[in-house]
Structures are given as C-alpha cells and as structure tokens.
Image (cartoon, rainbow, N blue to C red):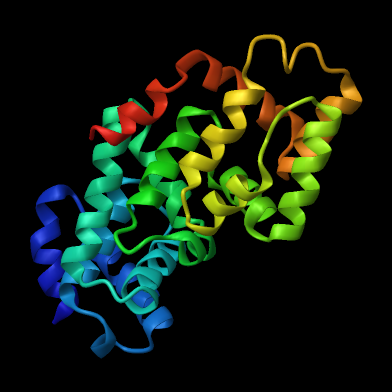
Length: 239
C-alpha cells in the first residue's frame, strides 16, 4: 500500500513504479519491515533521491539517522532538507552537491549536529563555497575536539607558522558544534595576504597536517576564504 500511495504522488514527476519499489526495498533492508516507515517517508526518499541524484543506499542511511537516530518526524526531516536547499541556493552553490555531501556523512552529523541541524546545513554550504566537502570539516573538527590534540596542533601552528591561535577557543568551537566558527577562526589568520605564500613546503605540510587535511584542500580553503571573507557566512546566514 505504501508503495502505490507514494507512486501515485510521484508519477507526475516522471518517477517510475520500479524506482519506488527499489527505494521501498532499500528502506525495508535498513528499517526491517514496511511497518517501520510510512508512505510519507518512502515518498520523500524517492523524491529526494531522484531530485538530488543521491544513491538509494546514501538516502536511506541519511533518513535512518534523521528519523531513528535523531528522532525527527517527517515534518522535521522536511524542514531540515528545505533548510539545506534554501541555504545552498542563497549561497550560490550546487544544491545537488550539498545534498549528496550531507547524505554521505551520517556519522559526522550524528556527532556534531545541534537540535535543529542548522549548524550542519551551514557547515555543508560553507564547505562547498570553500571548494571542499564535509570530509575536511570533519577532519578539522576532530583535530580540535579533544583538548590534548587541540593544544598540540595550536602549539605547533603558532610555533612554526607564527599564528596566534588560542587552543581553548578552537576546542570550545569544536565541542559546541560551531563548525563554521571553527573554520572562520582558523582561516581568518591563514588567509592573511602572504601567510600561505611565504611558507616553504615543510611549513605548508605542517599547516595541513595540524588541521588533518591535504595541502591542496587547505590551499583552496585559504584562497576561497580570502576571496569571499566574512561574506561567506553572511550569505549563508541570511537564507
């Protein structure tokens, strides 16, 4: 019944019965039985999978986290997705790429999300504007999540690069899930004209290692942050 109910609503968008059946099978594999999810969830899963070109396995895992892991209702799940879409469009980045990125990082979401999930939406769009993904955001956040590693990375950066980071500030931002704030704090010093360019290969290697990202990812983040500056977060926050 859930399959045909969802299909009757989706057929007008060019979704086939086979696609709905495939998504229903994927949901059953994840949730256990048809009784454990509604036709509304099947409708949303199929619609978003097609609209954002997300693999069935990623979509199902994403919805499983939101509903069973975080206890969100269908309405709250829709609000979260709508927030992602609105912020991505407002910031001028690909909605598909943002949605695909978020759906692949369920463990990261489970660890760092606030009650509304808006911090994850902001972080995903912010990362895309910087030319990276949530993988880099996760690596940076994990680096400063524990106080010992935050102290170690901060001391190394300040000593080798000449920055003036405060370990407690970086640790607090990671602990509270202020993912955009953490990147702002780091990139505001890294992106100062000449800081990256004046460093030799070893110093750049240390900078990247202490953030847990590759040198090419950090280079993109530095130059994109320099290009957009504080407008990055303002574009995201106003939507």
